[in-house]
Image (cartoon, rainbow, N blue to C red; front, top):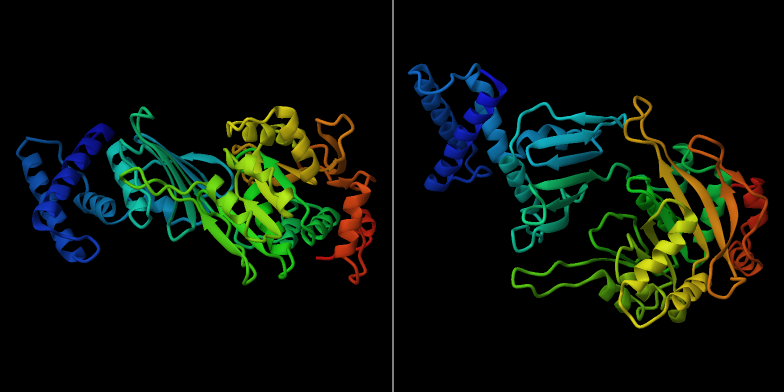
Length: 432
C-alpha cells in the first residue's frame, strides 16, 4: 500500500470517526473505551470493503486504530514531538512538519499527517486557552501545553495553508550562574550584569530569533534585589521568574469574538508607568509600546526589553524605528535623544545555525555596550564593555568602564558587598 493510499485511507477513517463521535455525542476525554470501540468498528468495516476490492487493504489495522485514536484524543502525528522534551521547536506548513531536535538539527517528521489534522491539533492546543483562530481572526499567539510552550499560528486567508510554530521553553533554570555554566557568558561579564541588575539601569537585549534573549532577560530579572518592584509585560507570557510580593506579571489580551475587550502591550505599559515600578520589563518590543518606554525615565523607572536585531548598534536603531511606528507627532531626532538618555546598556546575543549538528546550538553573548552621553545631541554614542570576536571565542573585557554616572550608580548599589564595577569587570571578584 503506497504512502498516498495510506494517507487517503487514514483521512477517510478519521473523518468517519469524527462524524461518529458527533453523532453519538462521545467525549474522547470522558469515554475513551467507547471511542476506541467506535474506531475499531470503522477500521474493521474499511478492511472488509478493502477485501471486497473496493479499497486498498490496510497492512496493520492495529496501527491504524492507534493512529486515529491519537488524532482524536491527543495531538495526532505531533504527539510524539510534543511528548519529547528534547524537541525545541516544531514547524507546521500545511501537511508538512519539521522540527529542531535536542542536538540542534532540523529534522522531518516521518509520520504521515495532513493539513486538516494539523489544523485540528492547533485548535486542540488552543482549547485550554482564551485564544481562538478562525477566518475572522487568522493569526494567534498563545501559551499552550500547561504554559510550557508558545504557539504562533496563521491560517488562510492570510496564509496559503495552515502555518504554525510551536516553541518550547527549554530552559527553566534561568540564572546568570547557569548561563556561565552554558558558556553563554563569562564569569566576569555575568558578574557585571548581576551588578547592573542591582540598579534600575535600563537594558536592551538584542539578537535574532532563538538567540536566547528571553532566557537572558529572565536571568537579569532573577538577579534583581527582592526590594525592587518589577512590572513584567508580555504579549504571550514566556517569563516565569519568581518575583517579589510587590511585583507582578501582565499578559496582553486579544480581542473577543465581537472584536472588543483587547488589552494591548502599549496600554499595559502606560498603566504600569503609574504603578511606582523600579523596573518595567517588556518581553519583546515589536510595536507602539516602544514609544511608551520613552516616558519611563520621566516616571523614574528603569526598563528592560528584547528586540530583534543583528548587532547591538542596530538594536538602538530598531527600537527608535519601532517607537516611530506608534504614529505620534514626534520626530526621529527627538526619539533618538530620549532613548540615548534612557538606555544604559545593550546586550547582543547570537546563535549557531540550526544545522550545526551533534554538539547542539550555542547561544552566546557577543557584546555588551554602554550607551554614553551623546556627543552630537541626537545620535547614540556607545562604548564596548565586553565583546567576543565570534561564537566560541572568549568574551573579554575591553578595559573600558561605563560612564562615570553609571559606575557611581552601580558602586552605590554594591556598597557593603566588597565588590566594585572595576573589580568585577577585571575578574578580580565574581559576585555570583
